[in-house]
Image 1 (cartoon, one colour):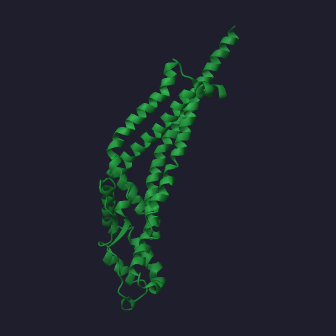
Image 2: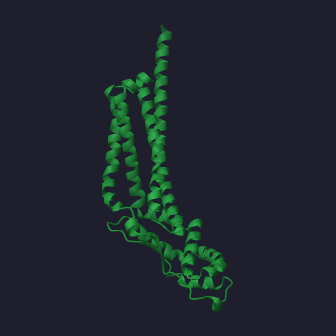
Image 3: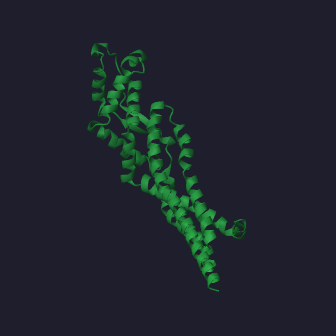
Length: 284
């Protein structure tokens, strides 16, 4: 194997470059499919917002802000109020607010000048107020509770500027893929035969590149969450981020599959060649 690597050093470098280009192409395709595609963006974000942990975190945040001046009272009815608010956020009553924040988020993420993304509570504010009123404390015992009109999820200045790379991504995906394909095929074309051992090495490099691509999500998570100081909102933003990274990882699976197929193809070609050599020897 050492001799094979030494004899194919240049082509192995080509394979490394090609694998990097595959990851870049995969990322470009993902951005176009899940960030700039309204349907996919809406589906992923809505599902993340409606998850139990997101609704519980939003309920906690509403209660924290509403009772910010009355911590003692929050300790008495906070948990019950938060649970009821989380429940109502999962009903059709909150659909308008959820649709609004998701639509606005997609517009701002793909905008050249993104604005702050907030969860609008104005449509359910009265209902939330009534919920707080039925948590076991009479209205006369309730102080002036300040229920927020909206909850800021992420500041506009902290939103990644996908707009700047959106147009470029449309070109990067096909170009990077075609160059990668050329770098993989060229060594075999030049030799006028499929080099089985080199093909196995190329496949292994593609698999490694795919595995390394899985690290992209964990690497970018801390810088993004660092801008979200509130612990409740961090849960919501993290859920949305994780939902999108899950789609990226799912798409990256195809790079791993491609690498595995290349290795299998290389092994098959190697076995066929060895079989022909063995057959010729035995026929003599």
